[in-house]
Length: 325
Image (cartoon, rainbow, N blue to C red):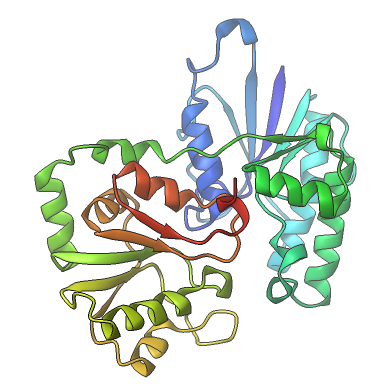
């Protein structure tokens, strides 16, 4: 079987779709699939500065780099999804086209499988965007309905897909995400020297609550800060600080409220902002934390929750979306 993979997010590790593709590719390396399966892969990816040297990323697979017409980014992405991918499926005589994010093509010469991580743009008004974004959401909703199968990452997301996209349940398959394998290095008894280096690198306090993630409004970071303020006001131990890690919003807006501004308004001098942290340092961050805070209003999966649990760190999270059994 020849599987053609949409590699638009190849090496874009700051996005969830990029992480998903990268980690799956690592696990689908040669030797991980039974020889009798006779599966081969072609990964199609756009020729950009970020991924121009990806031929060694997945030894044994065909890494096919494709140039795109000079178009605005949103049109270039649409061209890639609706023109480049189906043409390539025909040219490579693929038996299956896999799109690891919500963007199946209207036409495909072979069966298409699409991974839909969540349907936030349907469920949360703040994420619906303007007219063009809503048209795009309508397009990918329709193409998902026409796919041979839909992969999703939790039963909560599957329920949403069946209910709101009206895709028959028998065509929706739940395949859980797993914690990144790089985190296994700190599973259980973590190496003391590694933890010490990370603590020193980011000047981390001895004890701290940790938030690590994005800052769009569904992440509910404002509530995290308000809860920490309440914790202090009710005689919580002030030596347990709050560490907020992740690339901060470039501007304060209702969609991406600036947590630094909110912390200042709440007079929270005990909050430490670390900014972007290296992927290799994340396991140590989790392991060093007193607890991981993740009160998200909606997640298709919530990968960071299991990464923190894998590090042996208690998790305080919401009972919404994928957190509900």
